Length: 493
Image (tube, rainbow, N blue to C red; front, side, top):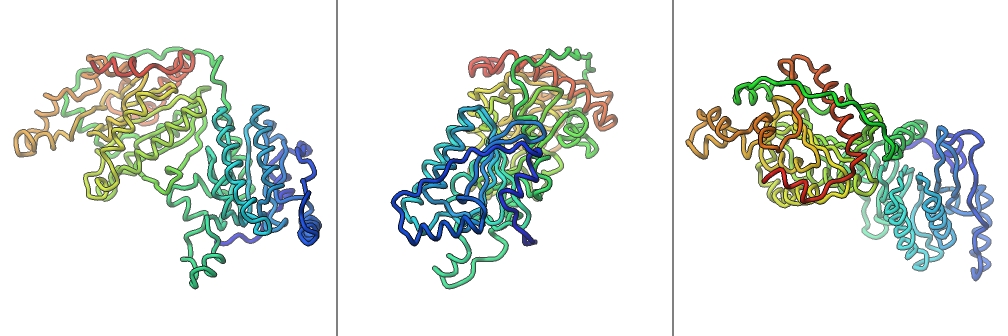
């Protein structure tokens, strides 16, 4: 659905920021050395837009929270970026970095200002470098893409957000459709350069109307700016004795359709959740849920294998692991603990998965988790089949549901290899010591959460028990900090 109107920079300030809180950071643009014709064009643009350039910068309060802001103004020469507007963007980013502020960016632009040519085009380098420095300082950078956002703006400050959302129906892409038509003599395929299509392909995190922007950004910043130090200890909920349930019974219980997965866990146990979407690079896998979340006062990046999103037709593929690695990078950059959740029938066995580099993605996920410079916590929630499960295991702390398990293959697959039938699956599962209780005895698992008698019979109570353990463990990890690769691998000796 196309956008029916375009908000000006002032409109967006009034809509998103607290009344009366806006303070401009702008200084008059440098117009030295320009032609009289271009000066007249700039003056006409300023009269039309009510701003002196295509970008305004400043600060304000959003629901009481001080934030830096960069806003495009389409009314000024279609929001195009020249040297003066690039100077303003860079100065705004650098000031937000110096002052330790989260930065909200809302670009709207046709791209580089053609009147200035290559000297304007190369400003993308400075802008991208400034955003990278802001992110390297551990400060949130949140982006709202408006209609349209194309060209050099999309390819610099429009595409570097920790969280990126877009206006419904917005034209969002690199090469504008009018340029494409002129160069190639045909129209650009419809429906590609839209917010909705970018969301479907895992490039942006959500499609959000302007009136909802303050809400989603505030929720994200509640998690991203939650204290990392001084989080009060959470009482240890303790560990109840769990019965020694037969291994095959554990496997069959973990496969019950009624068993709660990551979505119900977040619904019943998390204080705040902001879903993210995809790799940001053109992939999204329904078998993985990625989110910013809080359990009690403890913030985290949450990576959960979603049993509901994994089907026979669409098992978890290499894209899910690339999406998970995006989450790992976020945790490292923002100094947030990382929570991984294992609950998978196994990674895809297909030509597409092989062509997508599945084995390499498993290896890279293992390497990234072992060496991650952020506290890590793994929850074994249900089934744990193969390398796709193992890729989420390495962590400073590992907790497991009573009927969770981990195996190199489904027991049926192990039976097929050893006995050339499926009948010996229960026997193979017992012999391979796959249960959480077996891994607890070996020191691979640190804590087991009881099921009474089965999570499928008491989903809400079970999820709340798991949530209490996550809250306790995350608070402790925030106190101790990230472990070393040596400490993370020692448990597997």
